[in-house]
Image (cartoon, rainbow, N blue to C red; front, side, top):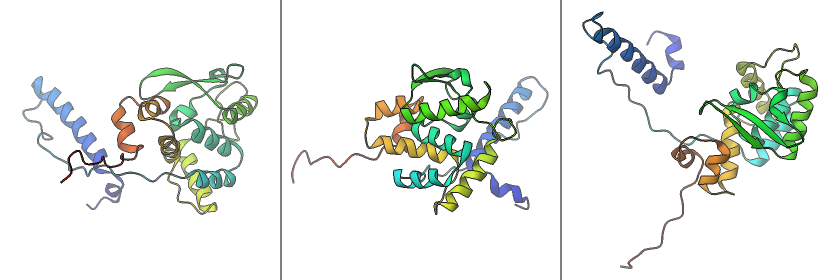
Length: 219
């Protein structure tokens, strides 16, 4: 409790680290290196997940207007594709096929390459980034080095304040993309567009509950 950094760790993070520590001691215990597993039986209560705020189309428009340069291109990409920030930062010029209008993405959750079709806004953004990248990563800093996540988060929060919005980071843009699509497509299609591994992820975070069913038997 005296550690200021302790307040920065979520219950989920603490639980995950305890599980890793427990696995290590279980391994050591099986081989006779230790007598007991001190992490065994340690339980961290994790509150149920709640819906996280997403930005509306109108708010996204204001955010984009408050961004400039490479940050603006990155935001345009994220809100039009729903890419994870890690996937976007790994993109290179060779991943973009302008003639076919496709983008090859390393799916960081599924550990595979996905090929996705992109709209005309994304084609324009990727073409512009390709010309400026010199054949390397599409999203670089002014010094030519790949953008860092912490700097992106800082700049997004600053742009949000400029636009009068509460912006939390790049993941919020992915949630906003999925939330907007949830009102236009079925859950199975949204799962494919968002490239979720499990449809329960789609249903839990991005799809509103259906309307109540009419009574089957009237009282």
